[in-house]
Image (tube, rainbow, N blue to C red; front, side, top):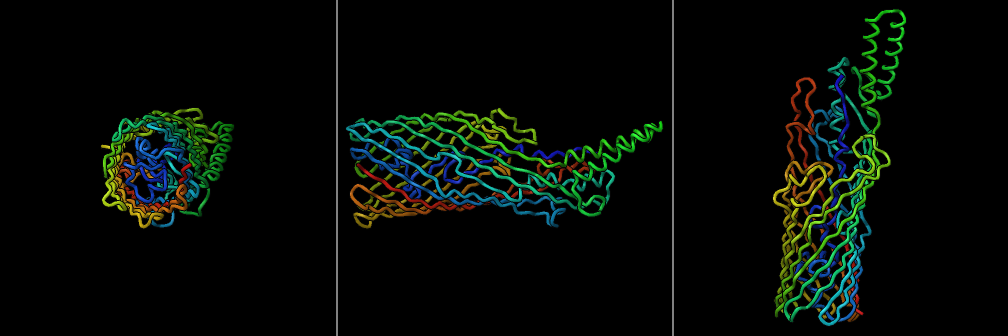
Length: 485
C-alpha cells in the first residue's frame, strides 16, 4: 500500500501581520500613524520611528509618549479540491483564522538639548499577534482527503468518506528597542544614526487527530486503531501458518500485517508544539530638511540578519527538531516623506516606503518568490479645528510583490488599501491625548494549482487540480498620551 504522509506542518512558519507595513515590519507604532499614515516627514515625537532625524527640530526638553493599540483581524481561505467532498460533501471549504490583540503597547522618549536630540523607543516592531484555525487548514485536510482513494486502490473498494479533527495556532512577535541620536547641522538640515535591537518570539501548536474513513463503504472507523487490529490479526495468523510449515500463507499474511501496520502508523495522531526565539540588530540612518512651510524626511533601515532557533516540546512530524535554526531576516526599508503647511491650521503630507524583501533570507527560500518587493504610498491631512483640537485622516496603499510560490494558507500576504482617522486634544499645554481608528480593505488573491499541495491521483499518477482564495480583514483602535516636561 502506498505511503500516506501528513507533511503539511512543515509550512508552519506562520506570518501573522496584524499591523500595517511590510512582510515582517510594523509601521503603525504610534497613534499619530493611525490618524494619518503619511508620517514620513513628522517632527513630533512619533518621528522617533517614522522620521528619526526629525526629532532634532522638536522643542527643547524631555518628551514622552505612551500608546496602546487594540487590533482585530481575520484570515479567510476558501480551498477548492475535489477530494474534500469526502468530508461534508462539498469540494470547496472555508477555513477561518482569528487574531485578537487587545493590548499592544509602545513607549517613546526624546530629550532635546541644543542641537542634539537623543531618543529611545520600544514597541512590537514586527509580527503582531496570534491566529487560531479551529478547523485546521486546507493544506492539512487535503492530505487526509486522499485516504479514501488510497484505500479503494489497495483492497478496500467503496471507501469514499473520511473525517479528521485538526487545529492550528500560530503566534509571531518581534519586540524592538530603538536607541539613537539626531544632530541639527544647521537651521535646515539634521541627521540621525541609531540601532534597533529585535527579539523574536514565535510559537506554533497544531494537531491532526482521529482520522476516520468508511473502510470498504461501511461505518466510519478510526483508521489507526482499525488497521492496528488488522495488522495484529494478520500477524497472529502468519505465526500459525509458520508453525504449520505453510510458508506461502505465512508470507501472504505477513505482507498483509506489514501493509496494514503501515496504514496504522501513517494515520496516527500527529502533534506539534514548538517555540522559536532569535535576535538581531538593525542599523538606522536618517536625514531631515526643513525650510519654511516644507519638510522632507528620509530614513533607511538596514537588512536585519537573524535566525530563529526551535525550542520543541512535541514534534510528531519530524520537521521541527529541537535546536535547529531557521532564517528569519527583517527586510531593509527606505522611507521618504514630505509635508507642507497649506494654511497655519491645515497641513498635507505624502509618503513612500519600499521594503527590500528580496534581500532578506526567509524559511524555505521564500524570498525567491518576491518581485520586486513591497511598496507603500501614503497621503493625509491634518486640521487644527481650535488651539486645543486637531483632526486628521489619511490612507495608505500597500502593494506586495509576492508570487504564487510565496503564498500558502499558513502564510500569505495580499495587497490592500488602509484608512485611518482620529483626533488629538491638548488637555494642557504639556499634555496631549490622541485617539484613532484604522482599518484595511484587502484584495482577494487567487492561487491556482495544477497539483493541489503536490497531490496526485493514486490511480493515474496525474496531479489533482485545486484553488485557494485568500482574504483578510483588519481593524485597529488606538489611544495614546504625549507629555512634555
